[in-house]
Length: 193
Image (cartoon, rainbow, N blue to C red; front, side, top):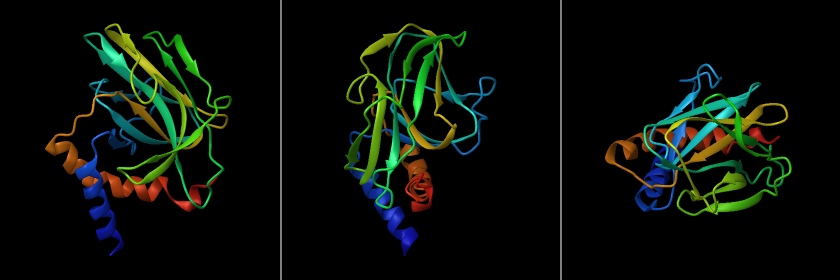
């Protein structure tokens, strides 16, 4: 019954999800290092990449052959069991030589809680490059990196990128598989810091 409920809830989420990011679960396809970063394809298409720091910084690579609107932001799952405790994450945007373009310090940022009505989940919202989940800057064509980290480089976080909502049948089918896994891992009471 529990898995049927998750699938039904996931389907309802997809059916009514007009303003959401495509969920992606980083489950080890990339090492997330400088040498083997997570590849973000089509950087303007909205994505929510669910990842876990396991002792090192994470790197994401964006490569575009044309100028593109850049958006990036960090959120953390908010659970009832630990409503006011959470890990804070920072991120930097880097150029192709790994030189810092912008830095967003999650430790000094005033995080705020947000209810995502379509997914029916609470999040802590951290710093963002953009405003109100939207891009405010166009980057030139080229290669860029996003580095995610915190004080001990441990814990679950979500990197949101892009701001164009696009859900085709293949994306929706993948969501039916990945959403129950995300919910189980990221909204687990055992993950309280």
